[in-house]
Image 1 (cartoon, rainbow, N blue to C red):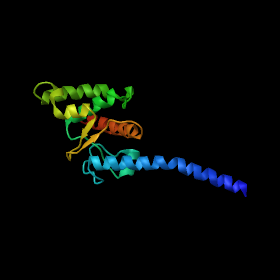
Image 2: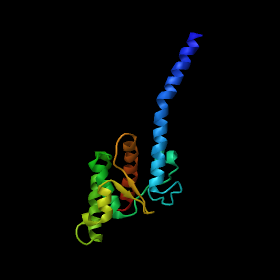
Image 3: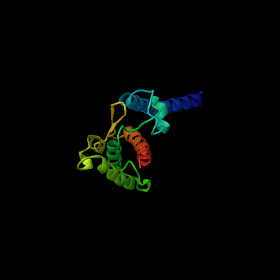
Image 4: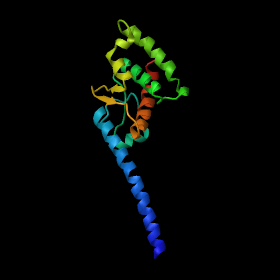
Length: 156
């Protein structure tokens, strides 16, 4: 009888340890869904969020402008969300060049760029997602950065 009790106690302990992680993941999914614009996700240019897509029902993440994509890529590089082997620096440099041809003056004067460089992703629907933060949000930010880098490469 005590063997069954010990096993049951271990199982209960294991479940209790996993519960906060599941709740936190659900909260991140809800946060992303509410900040980007719901589960409909009309914009498909950046593809799904992988494992995060199922958490909040969000099917895609993308930026609404070249300037914002450039700024977000810079934010992701500065905060080490994109690895050195990703080619992100080269993509950012090419986007900066392209952006300077579209703006009068410095590309850094573009409001989308300045938002992105601060970690604010501007969606096509006019909503913003703040990518700064730590913990489980940092893991979500890494996945968002990967998707925005894919979008950036498609803009070259």
